[in-house]
Length: 109
Image (cartoon, rainbow, N blue to C red; front, top):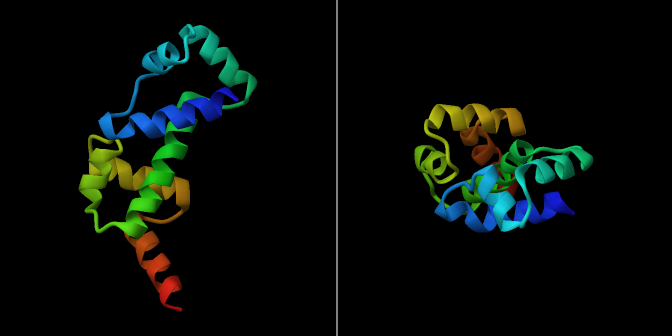
């Protein structure tokens, strides 16, 4: 699917910075409007895909790396740590710290 291809591209490109919608369209050899239509057909958006990738990466790094929230926010393309914390809470229902603490408690149990 188009959304799966975008998810792969975003995951690969993320260490170099979040790719723009237009650069993703170019990498997929599509116009922006064609890409937008394809995503609408799959009932998703570029923002939703970016958020899904960011959430997965954040959860993984919180569990397996000793990364500061501010550094993680920057790696994921957020300009402010507070924006990242707000987004993470909307994705998971908990703050990055409580997520990490809860997962570590479960691992010890």
